[in-house]
Image (cartoon, rainbow, N blue to C red):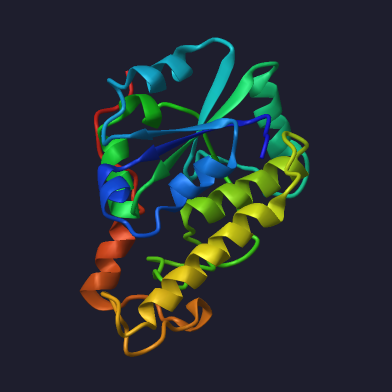
Length: 225
């Protein structure tokens, strides 16, 4: 699928080596104008730094926060701000592909990413992830986040999204395969009980809930010069 925006997926090595459903890799394979980099800290990654320094690019980080431009906000203000800042340059969006805890560590070790302008969106739907539980409401897989961002960019007139069903269809087929494997007693990882509906799952409580909530605090690190 072609897009005007360039997507750069920054994948944690654990996600690359161990995760059975690396949705960042799936998304990268669907988008012709994208690339995938594996690492933890990216200040020394020449490819990433070249994209950031290129004067033809306008690099941003997809990450929620008070200082992020919310492309889903009603009215033209937020989209116009991004369009004005970008000018005629290529919009390059960096997406962190990791758990929230690992992603926070990646940001802590990557000052150049923390210094980028940030964009975000308000999800149009809760996560469809059946085989994983999101830490808090509003969290999405990398594939779902890319889908939501493309919807927001299209609504803002900043990009095209000709095949919105492609990403979600692939996501569903991937999960269907994983669910069939989990239901097969002859396979490793067999589950005696089925996965629950994501919409019915209670948020983690106690120490587990507190620990998961902490990852949404701003990553510590030295102030930008």
